[in-house]
Length: 500
Image 1 (cartoon, rainbow, N blue to C red):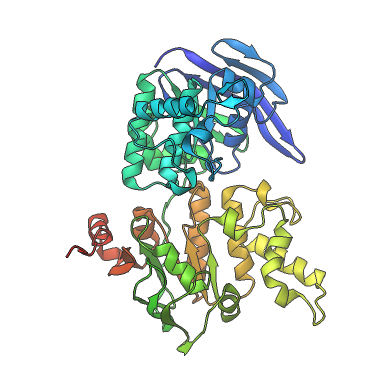
Image 2 (image 1 turned 120 degrees about the vertical axis):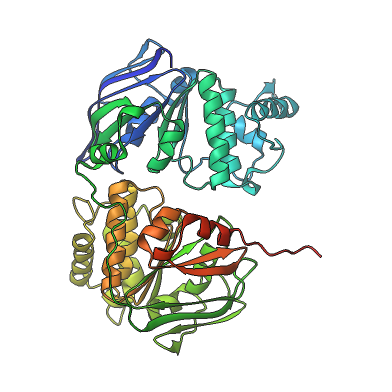
């Protein structure tokens, strides 16, 4: 680690009705990875948006490479050597790799674009990272992991010496995470300072030099990573000790509620059979592309089924569209909550009321405002959604609270089967425990709970029974108490031999 390249002192930022940052200090050195930690809503992203010029600070001082900046715009932050890679990648999916890398700063000869030169430059920076990507390839055809590498190459191309990574591994496989960590180590060696924001605390030991912890918009502590235990980090983030990372309750298993028989849909749902019982949580494990999400989408009626039957309480239910599933009492909290689970520009009240209009409208379609308000306030109270009122827009809430709204809109219907797809992706450790407790409460009430997760410790810690998928097939069904990560991984890599 070298000299201090970023110094932020006493940073304050207010939004209407919310003090997002309150006298926050932050420091970054060259050649180090600084993990910026805290719960959703702690102020991490706001602080980094100020550093990258997206937001303007209300008070405080900023120095980058010993130069003071009263205000930063995205352009002046970039000129100072700052680049940010957002959790939701901001790329033009219809443009090529090279076009994305030089978007807004195209190389020109008078009025003519120098396409060949941009492609050569793009290739140079991709090669520096050891990434084999064709600069002419359309970005939308590439997996998220490759898109992330393009963003890093773009940062190098503008000579970024301060790289901010916001949840960079949330959509990556284990192998892709290893590749990313290799690139991070290379960037460190070249003197780049990296701010690493992640809720996956188990990753920190592989790359982190120092940590800064924030809570409720305030600086809590910082120091060398080696001087912190995981319990100390978590206590600093949530303000209390998390006694149990994966709270599990024991409930006697009851009768069969839900059954899927011979389900086929597309290439990644092939002859899927399983059952769910009262008083248990089923976890779906497997690698990316195994068919877990596709199975939930076919059950819920998003994707067309080729064949198969779905039974609830022993009676077959015909599901051709999500509306059929909802009416039957089978609901889904989808993997991408912002894209598929929420209307982010609508209020909490509107998000909860929208899929339940059949319950809150009279025969001529007029909303019973009193009933709507009662249902929304009950959901907010039952799920402890942190909000000043139900009229707040969903996009102003933290990831954990957004996830609770997605769940809350279904629970007001007294649903019988609740399916969660990656329910804790991108949310902090405290919010994760709250989501687990919601799942446990559903289990206690006799509701069938099914969830998909890419985190094996989570599946083993919360599920009673684990169903493993590989290549569109169920390759194993095991008790969570009697299994190991090695056993799950073996089943998750049981590919069919398709060679003649």
